[in-house]
Every structure is written in C-alpha cells, then in structure tokens.
Image (cartoon, rainbow, N blue to C red; front, top):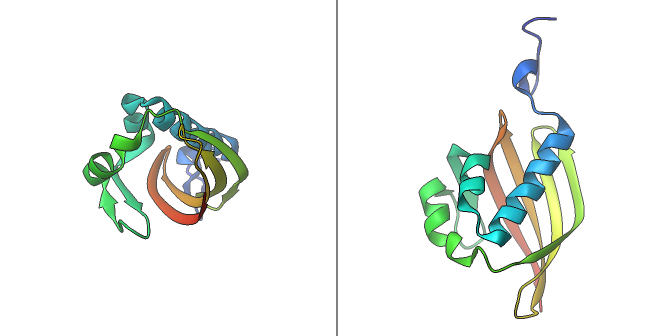
Length: 126
C-alpha cells in the first residue's frame, strides 16, 4: 500500500525494530572503540543528549563533553534492550578499564534511521 503511515510516520521511513536494537549496540561498540565516524553516521544532525548533569546537549556539545571518554574499551553488557514505539530502552552494566562498574538506563529516540535523542539515567556505581 503506497503512502501508508502509522503513528511512527511513513512506513517507508520506519526502521525495523531489530535494526534499531542493532544500531544502539553499534553506537556503544563505536564509543568504546573511539570510532567517531561511526557514531557521527548513527546520530542525527539535530541530535540531543541529556543526563542529570548535562541536560539538552546538542550534537557539538555531546562530542565536546562526552567524547573525551570514548575509546577506553568500555565493556557493556545489556540487562534489557527493548523497543517501545519510536524509542529503544536499554539498561546496561558497564566495566571500565580501571575495573569500576556501574549500571545505567538510556532511552534512545529515533528519527527515520538515525538516533535523534538520548536520555541517560544513572544507576549504581562501584
């Protein structure tokens, strides 16, 4: 059916759910590897990033504030990764190279085939 739309926009622009989950996994892997070009290809031009410490960073602000932590081989294990409407919700436990661990939840919003917004909610750290 040509021109079919649903609450998530035109069907032709909607990314399959499993592709969204894979894109989130790819974003984490690229960050851990310090692969900025892959991250740039995954996030939208009007990307926003928020944590309790930094609310509403734009794309440039994300790279300025967060990118210095990339490429340290962070190990992430997803506890849950599920699609809900136009969002993916991921809770993960992470281990840094210095052996500290933590648990966070992030919400990833999509616009077409790119991540348009990330909201980070901090959990525990040790």
